[in-house]
Length: 198
Length: 193
Image 1 (cartoon, chains in turn blue, brown):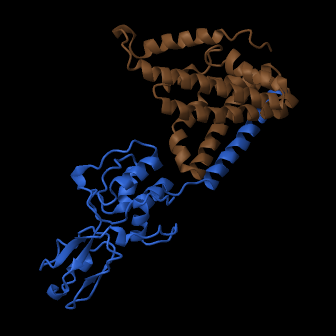
Image 2 (cartoon, chains in turn brown, blue; image 1 turned 120 degrees about the vertical axis):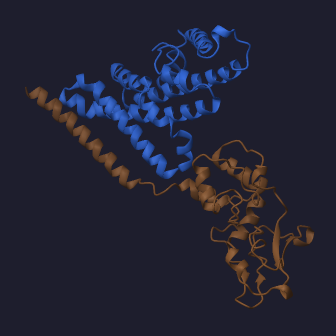
Image 3 (tube, rainbow over the protein chains, first blue to last red; image 1 turned 180 degrees about the vertical axis):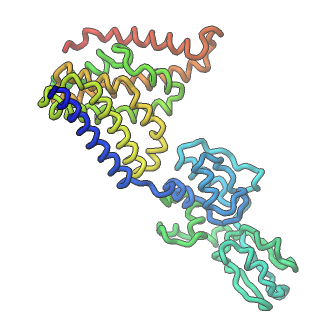
């Protein structure tokens, strides 16, 4: 009889210890959200332009983490697709033309003497790169502008031009320092240069 | 030292778990369609096999044997292996999301891999010590990995080969595995332990 009791107690004890261990592990190693989304998000250009069909870069990152296509980001272009393919260990596919073509980096310029100060472009800008207030002239902070062209459509007097950024020798600069806390546009430059931001 | 080397050679080649002892055949046939997944599976299996052979040895040596409960070894080892796999999955998921992406789906599969239970039971049967148990598990895992990767590389080529209709798919895989097994039987007599 005592043999059976010992056997049951031994197995119960073992199971209890293991159960406690797993219970502890499930709290200690709890995963908040999906960390892979952050890594994908840091590779995206953060233009928040919505050309991928998602309302911003983070939702797009979430859809990629769920197994979505990685070739829907025209502003990021080939460089972003390569970086994503490397991160996720999948095949790099050419940019899906359905979502737009990869165009050279451009910025919005407001023809200031034609601006009527309607503030519509300020509301449209996803990254707050347009300065100005009601009935006063607006202008674009060129270094912040991601070239998403979302401000062109709402302008009632069509005074916003998309101008390609000069990418010749005059615009060349040393690689920016690798810093996690840099603003989106600098980050985009780093991604284009193939820097590792992870 | 040479004894340890003998254990490795014996488990990897001579007594290969898949092709000579015919353990762990389900992942051998199931995940060998692509070289890449085969590598992921090998990595995960190596990790779990080594760890679980250590844990089951400890459970046997310090729990079952003192209490005279050797007859409970099978059920205990199943419990140990399941816990080790589950714990590993949690830790990997937290510490390395990318590794989890690679290994994630394979880890739970390994719980049901009979080679893992086989190694634990054979360790006891052969009365291996602590270090021998680790090496035996590690060697078995290396053997499993070697065979799985070789086999999946072959299957990738067979997929493009001109195979008669009746033999397409798993059938030619079985034949290939049989031929590989014959080849591995040739290692018999290389080492004797």
